[in-house]
Length: 468
Image (cartoon, rainbow, N blue to C red):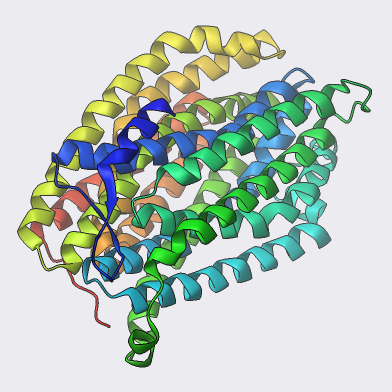
């Protein structure tokens, strides 16, 4: 938090009447840090919602641990759908800021916010009406289904707040006010942690609600996060407000261009998420211990990816603005630097994971067999972290920034459905391998995806300036 605050003075408002926020001329590394560090910290805090739930629920036993993890898998489908809308919002807003077109910036925000809230509404209805039926898709253990269904029913009411927070955070980051969502995330994480302790274990006179208490804490913290981000947007978002003459001069909204960007991202994110849920189903059918061990790795995976996802979002914003301004050569050079930063950072985290995993598994009150399996899975995960992170930066940030999102759709479908899912079924049900080997083998699809992405990157066909 303090590093983010120290870097904030490097941001400044443009002194012209256009009022668009720009960064002072400084080194590229500092430009990346200004965006990446707050985003990374916020992502880690967001991940901490589930991490804190799982660590505290971990004191209650394997059934509740598994329930939280499986409920999180379905919630993950919602998250990736909203993230897809947010990705399009980021592409549009950053490019139109690069073009200094405030009217299109405002319209891009409005359109994507409405769509994200629509997605949240659909998922809320599904989880409110069919929570146990949804959980039956993941496991046959009735105790886990009952616990996960109850948890999902409550947390789903926070989907609308989560969708609003995601889109408004994207806007603030494109304005290079990335530290503001971070501060909201800090407050929300504090609320989540405190309420978890009080409601799960029944402290300070409150009833001991267990897994239901964790769900209520998550719901309230999501609401707090949205309220704070909304207030920050009201305070700072007006710098992009268009003048009446700019609004009158706007042409018709380019729905064809918008759908050309949105549909491939929605398809690939949905298909990827379904693939991840198939993976969860494979793990679930390997036994409760195997599924619990995989669930225990989720906090480490979430925090690791969260710590480095800032580079992906920084890539999308920085390169998107350069493409919007027609600076293709500078955008390509910046891309290579960002890939280097991601490679170094991911290798460091791989080493950290190897050192901490024997101590990490001792946090949980689970059987020794579950702990041993968790260590084995984390060992496999440490080997694939660099590929996961680089795919996030190249595919999730750089290639998307030009708006030609069909490339990412094709790459993700090849990786997940031609390699990942078949390898998972073969290793688990044909060769009968244990879960650490199943996880490692199906994760090899990350290598395939990265190889294809780097070829596309080098050809530069992804570079594009959006039309108005």
